[in-house]
Length: 144
Image (tube, rainbow, N blue to C red; front, side, top):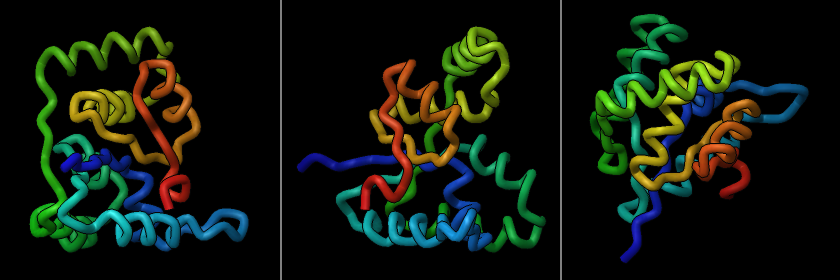
């Protein structure tokens, strides 16, 4: 059986947890429906320490501690580690892209590629950059 896998960018978690809506579009609902649809044994959602670190920049300490249990206790979530070579590659891509895309986003892209996962993001620059580097990337609503 082929297991479909995803690497979800921090913006999607924030859409969900902060109940974000933009111009009346319920981004949080798309995120919620995505996680509900892909919460079974046939799917893996990868995350990294870089993703967790990025979330600590935005969430309060208590919010982060409450939310991080999702990663620790769900059977679908698997932690992936960035190698030194991938870190160096991310720095190289960051330079090639003239620092117009964040280092963390490049790492998310590389980890999605490493795990042969679909990168789930709402970041338009990241969607474009992922395509350039042959990484499949989609918004959550595109998979509902």
